[in-house]
Length: 285
Ligand code: URA
Image: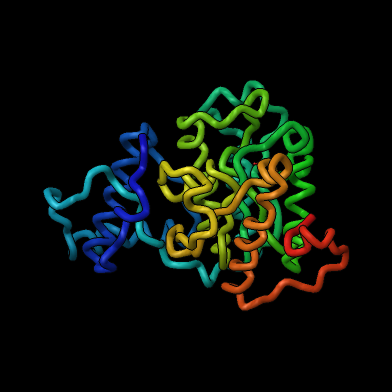
């Protein structure tokens, strides 16, 4: 099922509107065949309060937009300690590991839930594990991962200071593009990771995670470099490192996107240690 575009998901911010969107979202999950949701403790607490809120502000079903839209931002989890976040992430990882929602379980060696900092400024989201990631059970450890590491370091961070995850937690055979149903089956794990971590900024790498999180149908070239948001978290779509390996000339644009992320975080890139040749000086080599 195709989700609505960014322009049609604008909220007027009233409680009634927020409630209607959450109800629409849950109906959409049901229509997709899912009868339960992964929840973090803060989300579970929010859901406990839900019936009372719904009685106070019912949304007339006739005014509901079609097709359903993603929910408005749940409240951040400022009280979640790193320990609580770690426990929540481990639970999500265990559930992804045991997941039987699609046949990828039969062909993958390891699930690759994601790894990194529990209080990250930035969360990078890729598409799906490749061969090396499938072998090691860790995200972005192959050739594209080496470039992602250089991109992160060019921003003045280490891999351990950010969080790295994928939309799919299992490798598709021959690294083929994830099928829409695989994306929809696996997306709840990523959503819960994001709700648990509440990074200051999300960076989506390529079209698959960008479309999955924003409910767009657009290609990455149409949206890269433009600020969007996922559940209230600023989201910057940029090119996937695999694409940058094939199209090095696009690194300049990707670097502009990453500099915009740094500016949003009030940071500037550190001085380059290994300067690229003069014509490539402004982008990670
Ligand atoms: N490509 C991705 O999208 N994710 C990985 O983890 C590795 C390669």
